[in-house]
Image 1 (cartoon, helix red, strand yellow):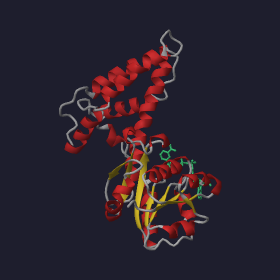
Image 2 (image 1 turned 60 degrees about the vertical axis):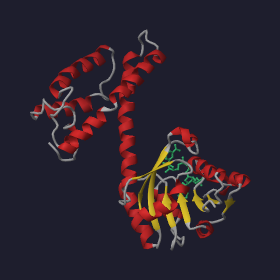
Image 3 (image 1 turned 135 degrees about the vertical axis):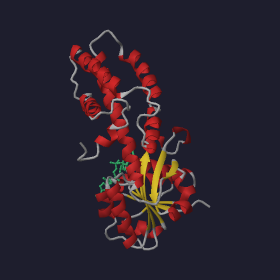
Image 4 (image 1 turned 30 degrees about the vertical axis):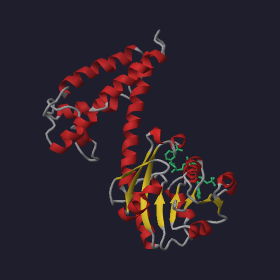
Length: 290
Ligand code: NDP
C-alpha cells in the first residue's frame, strides 16, 4: 500500500506535490506556516497538522518544500527528527545541502537533498519531462524511490548531499546563459520589419542544433585535450566576434550581454590557445585564474 508521508510547505510547489501524492493514494499529512494555505488540501484527503511537531510525528517520511534553506531550519528547529527520513526539496546551494545533511544527522535523521527541475504545472504529469535531482543517503533514496517517483521523475546523483543542488544550479546557470543570448538576439531585430514570432522558431531550431556542443566540451574536459576534433577554432571565433559587436553597434544595441564571453575568448586566445574551441574558457572562470 502507498507509503504515508508528511509534507511541510504548501506553497505553489508544495501544493502541486501534495496533489500528486494524494491522487496516487498516498496518505498525506501537510503542514504550512499559514494554515489557511494548507486547508484546501483537506478537501482532497490530506490531514492538516496543527504544528510542525505533530506533522513530523505523523510519518517517518518527511518532505520539506519551503521557501529557502533558512526557512527549513526555522520550521524544524524544535522538531524531533530522530528516526525520520527527511527529504529536502527546498532549493538551496551545495554548501547549504551539506550543512543541512550534517544538521539532520546530528538529530538522528537520514537525509536526502533535492533540486526540482520543473515548475508546478509539470508536477504529476509523466509526459512533462519533470524530474527531481536527489543526493545524500542512498539507503533512503532506494527505500522511498517509488514514492519519490510519483510527482516527477527521479535522478539520484550520489552520496554527497551537495550534489543535487550543484546539478540544479549548474543547469539553471546554463539556462540563464541561453536566456541572455535570446535577449540579445531579440534586441537586435527589434525595430526592424521582422516579426518576433517569425524569428523565434529560427532561434529555437538554431539553439537546439547548437546545444549538443555541450557534449563536445564535456569530452574535451575529460580527455584534457582541447585541440582534438575542433570544429570552430578560437582564433576564427574571436575574429567573428567583431562582426557580432559591430552589428550590435549598427543596430543601437548594448553589447553588455555579449562582451563578457567575448572578452574571455580573447583572453584565452591571447594566452596562445587559438587552435582550441571555447572549452579552455572553463579554466579561466576559476577565481584567481589568469
Ligand atoms: P511559495 O512562495 O509558493 O511558497 C513558499 C512556502 O515556504 C510557503 O509554504 C511558505 O509558508 C513557506 N515559508 C516561507 N518562509 C517560511 C518560514 N520561515 N518558515 C516556514 N515556512 C516558510 O514557493 P514555492 O512553493 O513555489 O517554492 C517552494 C520551493 O520549491 C522553493 O525552494 C523553490 O525554489 C522550489 N521550486 C519552485 C519552483 C516553482 O516554479 N515554483 C520550481 C523549482 C523549485 P507561508 O504560506 O506561511 O508563507
